[in-house]
Amino acid sequence: MSDTAPVRAGEELPVESLTRWLGEPVVVEQFPGGHSNLTYLIRTPSAEYVLRRAPLGPVPPKAHDMAREYRILEALNPVFPPAPKVHRLCEDPAVIGATFYLMERRRGVILRDPSTVEPAAAQRLSESFVDCLADLHQIYLPIGKPEGFLDRQVSGWSERWLLAETPDRPDMSFVMDYLRRSIPQQGAPGIVHNDYKLDNVVLKADLSGVEAVLDWEMTTVGDPLADVGLTLCYWTIGSAYSAPDGGGWYSREQLIARYAQRTGRDLSRIGWYETLGVFKLAVILQQIYVRWVRGQTRDDRFKDFGPRVRYLVEQATRLAERQS
Image (tube, rainbow, N blue to C red; front, side, top):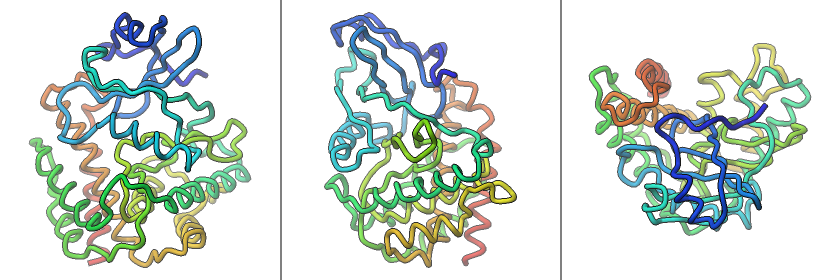
């Protein structure tokens, strides 16, 4: 089955303008997954590319910075092969109406239903998934300020939450207070992907390991355990990656143990990082939801995000209460 689809109504690209910029005719399809940046497949007579641009309508300040994402991948690809190679950056809004870039297309499998994987392959992929993250965290690039990273994470995401107000927004004050008053001491800095999850990874076609890691929009340098905490929240929220009988997929405990063994990092405060991860996910969905409430996006996939945000707030509150 194709992983692309016809472009959604209202999200079309100006094909003639893009053709002039590239210097050859283009055919455009869209990668329909994801709820943030818009991602397209660009076919030309000589090549095919993936095009990334910010979503339509107003976006939060400093968010969806495609030029920054391009430069991160440009620096990261030579030292971390799962990061796709980038080709061209366009910061002229006259071309398609926004800054965008082109990167290589990596072929493989994006796993939407982990229960379909045989146990032996599930265990192999669990190991590869964790090891890929551990390898990333050994890398340091001068793309951010690691000092005070966790303080900025808590204050920055709290501010974004307060700005994304809707009539049905649940109360997040207990979680924000818990995170603010119990910030751990940071470990050695490394690259933080900031959205590392199974469906942001392209797996090799034979399910032998990781082919590529996608969605580098929020990448920075800081405390890598922030990635582990967010990964753990994805490992349990939504589609469960561990079947009731194990199914070959790592349990949360196995994931933590393998990461600790590979990196030597202290994960004794991982509960705090997981709370931060669930909190961040709730803020991200609320930022998307508020754009739909205000009529700044016409994508009806976002109209039911209110209950999803409420569920995440409940999860974050339970985690914070457990550790208070």
